[in-house]
Length: 274
Image 1 (cartoon, rainbow, N blue to C red):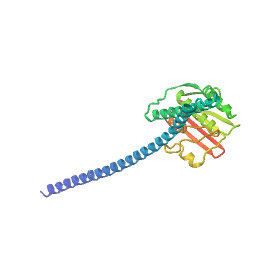
Image 2 (cartoon, one colour; image 1 turned 90 degrees about the horizontal axis):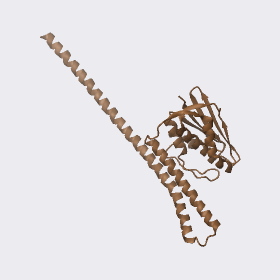
Image 3 (tube, rainbow, N blue to C red; image 1 turned 120 degrees about the vertical axis):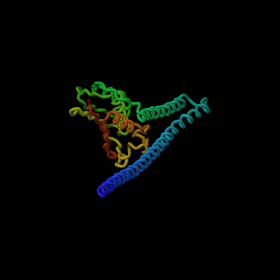
Image 4 (cartoon, helix red, strand yellow; image 1 turned 90 degrees about the vertical axis):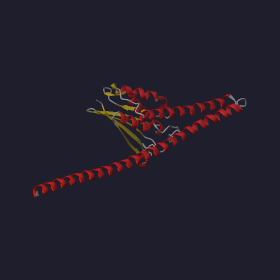
């Protein structure tokens, strides 16, 4: 009887220990889940706040060109007969520039929205990197000539990469456009590319206004200042670099920015060509 009693006590104690352990594990899991939920809610709130700021700036950027179009249209409507041909052409040119600004902003916004919804896929093919870069550079030739900027392509003509052409074209085009926008006139832009095993490094460097450390640190944030005028007072959407960063991530690559005020900027896109 004593032996059975001792065994009963040991068994009961074992069950109590097991139950206590399970209870403690449950408490720990509950606390962890609660903390994780709070962290997720905080992250979601922060993300929503950033997006609210982002769309607030976008709305402001849209307001300016639409306001310009409305003002120009009112001039034409009220004083058309009193204007000479030169004045009319000037106003029409202003309307065209403002409408072009709106179109660029909306195109960038729609592209960015597609990346957020996961609608941009990766369809790789064999691409001659020099030929593609030269083609992109030629499309910006008129802009470069206006600012007397020479674009130098330092890429081996034999480099073939396995990449998504749309993503590659978008990134290089945005980086070149950005470099032209912020370059000082009578200068040059360097486009370099290297292939080390399966790693491709493409860089676009300009000698222009550059950025300070704070701007470099926050340039990819949604709530950072989106628009800065170029050296020839060019307007922009401010989404270019953010789209490049998104596309680099989609392509399992990365984007690196180096910049110094009044010295210029160098942006490098790296990815694996497999």
